[in-house]
Image (cartoon, rainbow, N blue to C red; front, side, top):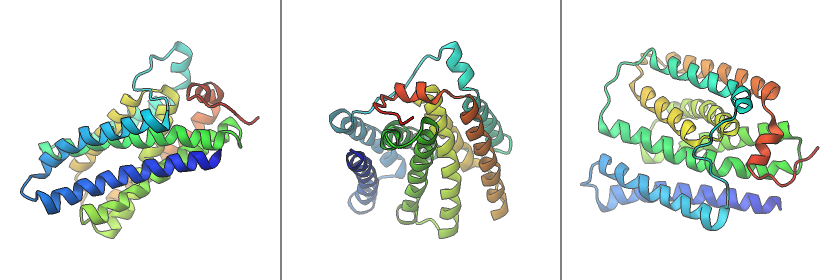
Length: 256
């Protein structure tokens, strides 16, 4: 059974990476005259449709774009909602906006497609992968960390697709691991994928506008985010009813 989930996770990653590289190849070698803005506009519906069809015909994962929280669920979701608010404020304070259409579309594509792939599809698959072997809390932690690690290492592709230097890519991997952890817990606790997408979009938009004068400025942001993630995980263990949320993701067997 675990091999079945490994196959689903692997296939999802292969298709997602293949779409990114395929669209990049299409832009550079077939239609280089088209602007990046046009390519980004095309990529969003194509990749969203491909992932949706993959889930419908093969993965069969529950996608919670919106879930109306009950009063008890609101109380259980305070760690993720609180950190989300803090992160939005943190990312907004030092920002001077110089937003153009390409920056907006890059953030929109990342917010929607990366959350759909890694939180909407891969995260519940990792919950099911670990669910038969570990306790509810251990299952939740492992799924959050595994899906976040896969998401962060995806950004190695920026070395090829964007020509990004090695050190900024390494820092980006660290930062995106923090972001992935936060949005995974946010989705797990609230079952609102639109909320995770919105947070991801806002972080990407403001990150592109941050005025960072040295490498230590970026490292300090990562350290702050790591601290927020640690507090969030502590709140998750103490206040979230993991078994209730796992059942919502249709986990058939939970180890006791």
